[in-house]
Length: 117
Length: 108
Image (cartoon, rainbow over all chains, first blue to last red):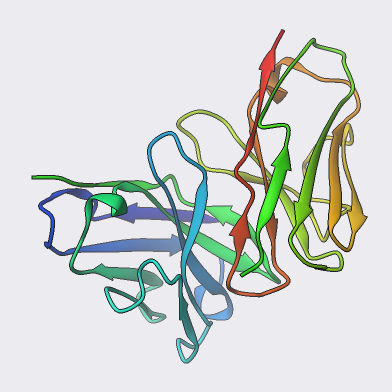
């Protein structure tokens, strides 16, 4: 059974940093591209970042470029999102999401991030 | 950037009704269009990929159609478990994905 389990969310002050993790199991992690997608309270879905299976290709949404860094450790079956210079508008539930030919076929349960003083 | 616009933003229907949700892209995206269902407090679930392909395990009452800029998600006979929010997503500009704003389907 495919499982994606996020962790690392919490309350952080504006300008602070947070590192999200996603532990993957039930599939060959190194063979899949991965994404982070977020959802602000009461709002829709926003794609945040993508990383290729090898980690060699990375993309970011303009809203987070220069502040967030996606990475992966295929030996540990783990995906990460380092978030720096956090703003109130980054407050959201962050989902780890498996990419399958352009569609997201599996999602984690999400980890909430709140940026507030 | 490719913008995705869904209509309506909300919809009320009875169990047993046939329901249609529309998604329009700001430019042609061929059939690079996916549909998701999200229930409150839960992660989204893939329903339809590549405009018209039913994801494994999804009931056959769900169907998708369209190409170019205009797409539809239809539910042939609404069931109680179908009340949720639905999102379209373009994958034409992979992996710079964009989602529609969502359509909230409520019980009438």
